[in-house]
Amino acid sequence: VGIAGIEPWGMEQTVICHDESVGLRAVIAIDDTRLGPGLGGIRLARYPDATAAIREAQRLAAAMTRKNAVAELPFGGAKAVVLDPGPGVDRAALMRRFGDFVARTGGAYLPGVDMGTTPHDLALVGESGAPVSCSHVDPSGWTARGVRRAIDAAVAHRGPGAGVAGLRVLVQGAGHVGRALALDLAHDGAELLIADADADRAAAVAAEVRGGVVAADAVIGTRCDVFAPCAVAGVLTPATIAALDCAIVAGAANDTLASPGCAELLAARGILYVPDFVANAGGVIQIHAERVGWDDHHLADAVDAIGPRVAGLLAEAAEHDTTPLAAAEARAARRLAAAPRVREAVA
Ligand code: NAD
Image 1 (cartoon, helix red, strand yellow):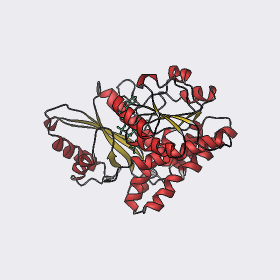
Image 2: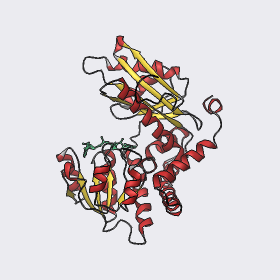
Image 3: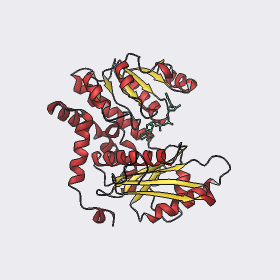
Image 4: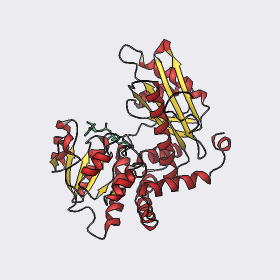
């Protein structure tokens, strides 16, 4: 409670997990379970100190609450971070032990895969008996499909036209989602620019989509119609927003805005920003589909619904002279306020 910068009462539960015998130091942040168990991935990463790890888990958990609420899924928001113990540690023992702590949450935390963890890790966590959102399907294609619907809705919001045909789209991050998104956009006549920290990967994907390559450190000032961040968090800061040369930002990366005030800065520059947690919900929708047994048609319909959802939020923001981020947060808050109380939802 006394740790500077941490909001102890900002969410339902924050669990600090520790077992030195297996090198485990982890944080489970359960933000909100009014809509259902808190769904969120397990991130394995290095952190400078415990405060940074707790803050990251809490921030990501809160984002999952908004993502799941706006996507109309029966999940709350949570996230875990496991501090990377470095080499020489028995990873299976680490994950199994972490699973014990997940099990103790009694189903309030429903873990998935996130940066640094794999479906195999998740299976080890599940050996404790803890429910896990086990998925053997790579959700990236569904995430890319949802981002594409978000881009289409944003383009349509700017005015009638030929959709993405002829538009210049800069995809930052040519990984699982970025590549699929670029292929989809190229198929429909967009002009692609590809950037990746891995120059070979950028070149390979650019060749596939007959697009150009932008150096990873030259992304921000490059002129384009749509900027699709699909790599790292925190790409948009006051300084980078001032240097952007695009009309629309819509991508898959989580936490694109370095701070909430960046949404106003984008609006002031006339740049239409689709909140990341609305655009990139395809992956969590896929997890839900797998759990309830939807076929691919049903899943595709649910992911495609991101399009009208974004259109509605952009119209709402314009009508109330607010930002799309504020409109999306208000929508999440309305859904949460209408939800049953905590114990009923989790029991
Ligand atoms: P990925 O690891 O497959 O690809 C990320 C790519 O970004 C890599 O090619 C990497 O080299 C590149 N990259 C890293 N730092 C970069 C930088 N500074 N500049 C340019 N490129 C850089 O990841 P992914 O699964 O494609 O996910 C992309 C983003 O979308 C992540 O932020 C992820 O959290 C988010 N996201 C993914 C999913 C999903 O279904 N995979 C769902 C929701 C959100």
